[in-house]
Amino acid sequence: MAIDMNNPYIRHYCKLVREYSSPGQLQREIILDFIHKTQRTFQHQLDDDPYGKLGTYYRINPELRRPKFTEVAMLYESDRLTLTQYRTGSHSLRIESGRWTRIAREDRHCKCGPNVQTIDHVIFDCPLMEQYRLNDIINIHDFFHHDGAVLFINHSKLIL
Image 1 (cartoon, rainbow, N blue to C red):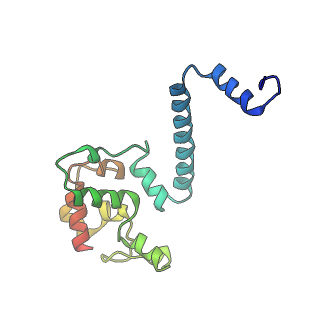
Image 2 (tube, helix red, strand yellow):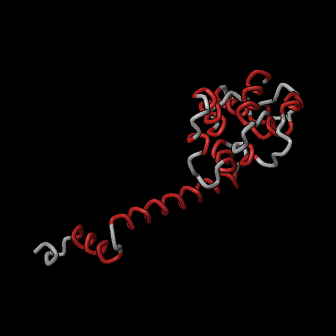
Image 3 (tube, helix red, strand yellow):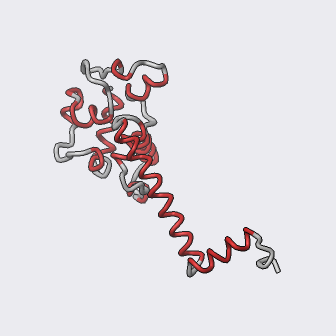
């Protein structure tokens, strides 16, 4: 018999059968393990560089879940794309476009002056966006869950 031959693959599957009551339980544990490892990686990036691509994404989506706006049937495809681009750092703000042309991060200035044009700067601090600002928003995570986020981002694309 294969189990008597000390086959490592058979031993591995026998161990899985002993440890898990069903394939679904194993699948759930693998998924949870993956999510925890990914969250730790993102947390390290956030600690090292909160305004980098992964740090920003983790601040926007700390649960690493699919955004609610993808489930809204009334959202135009162009608006869904815009929100996704800003959530994932695939936008044309200077923090991102400066990377493409190898401009030092501290030199990726906003049109408003000497501030680096990060998504946080545009949402919370940029004077050019003052009249469009969502005043009840206190953090970047809440911004991307606000109904006014699409309109604000569309205005920022025109102004900045």
